[in-house]
Length: 100
View 1 (tube, rainbow, N blue to C red):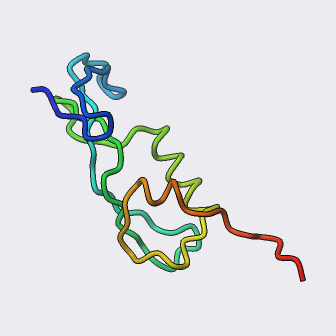
View 2 (view 1 turned 120 degrees about the vertical axis):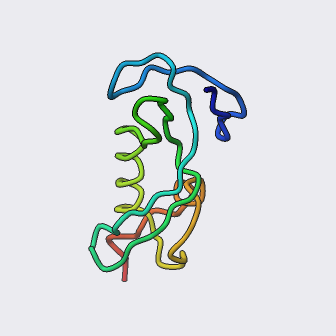
């Protein structure tokens, strides 16, 4: 089964990270993450993912790490509890050392 890649607008075969099957494809997935401070959870839409006929739909470790990093350094104070992966990547970086 080929899965349409909404990120690059094409179907591309991949090797599954979990079972090494070469029938995996890029896809997207809506995911929930807990914010680094643990105070709330957010729903991130259209996160790049991998679909494997054997293992199902999952987010790769590299994308997971990128999301975790952006949640930690991005200024999401004006974001609702639901936003897209692209909006997350475009979020401004927090000003951790404000000048007075």
